[in-house]
Length: 362
Image 1: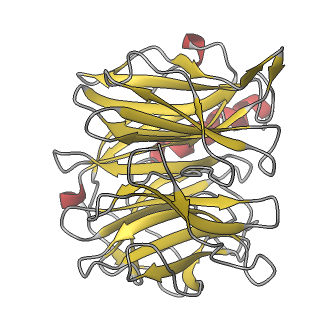
Image 2: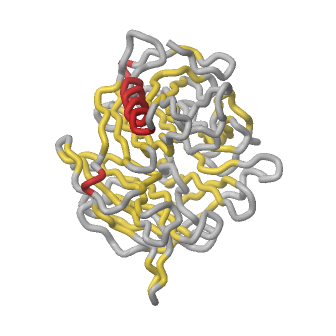
């Protein structure tokens, strides 16, 4: 088979798998689309999307440029107005004056109710970057000048913050300059002043980054983290994120890839992540999955977003939110070339248990 024929066969198989649950008879996906087409933008590569709801609709952001780490990489956004995405526009970059420019990384959107905050990272690499943010008073049309976060504060590192019952914005964060270590940051005045926890792990014992936060009915908080342990790792807090339990391994396989989760209005939890089949290369990001849990411990398979036979394909770094109408919106990197947007109706989800770490096949 020629390389061209294999490419189109791979795309066909992948398209047939998109949106199908791992067993017949159910399909909760109501929209599956690309936010933009390649001929609409000037950048060939993209990654690390984020999504938020606004009064006008939706807003998504990601970093795009020649390739990750290139100094020309900037933060791009698109707004979804009446079901249509606007042409992407660059709203932030790593220009520091005197001709210095660094790549930007990992944007994170958050709607405060008064303005949209867009956090992102700037720097030559993940070990030496710093945090900045910009704000928009008009749902993403215009943006402020960048504000650099204080030393020792990075802002939400990949996944969205959550507003706590005490009015504090809890930002899940992590660092990579001394191994992989997670911590939490809080601000009670939307970015003017900050505090942070100690590092929640010793990277020599367990290596974790990029927490995502779940809120349980009893007031407990839970974080799920990317790790180097081939599984997702979790920790719990009973004091609004000030202290956290020792990290524990979950039963969910993960090929050292970004994840995101959200607690739904009905108290259940949705997790979007790369599962992997132990028969194949565990580092592959060619499968992207949605799991559902009532307690954050026992997870059931819900939707298979991507299942590409080409193990070099990449569907990664998901972001997930629930909008006011109850629908779940997911964005993710599609082969580093496009950003995909999927809408799921959680009321139509039918699940099956994940047994022995294996995603059930049809």
